[in-house]
Image (cartoon, rainbow, N blue to C red; front, side, top):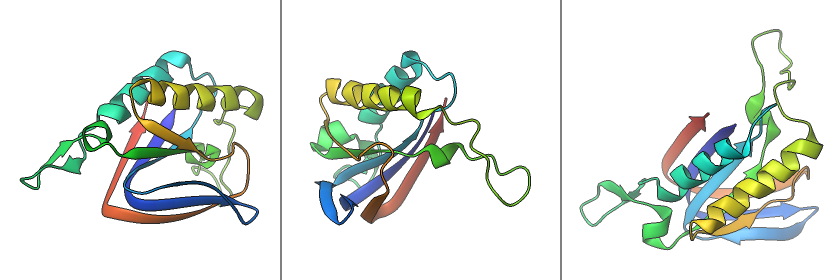
Length: 145
């Protein structure tokens, strides 16, 4: 399982020209589910992300979490995070879980994030999503377990 976590000031996600989700300040989490990923991995990642101290406190030090700030998370499924670029010029995606298994794992991950007290909005699994994102910092954290 791989997550790219980005601090944002505002993010809007649309599908076919229709606004699906938007958040103001918070985190955008792009999640890639790998073949064989388990609920234990999703549990670990959800807890870690909800509590990750990457927002500045009153002293300008990254010391506050999305929970501390009362911000939201926009969670987006993204199998392309699992691209294998080691051969040729076309990425391979054999490391990404099949959609029928990845979708329930993505949904489980979102539910686990919410169970930690974070407001979680979602993209649409498998859709061609258009994302407008105003990064904050920028701060980008990559987690792979």
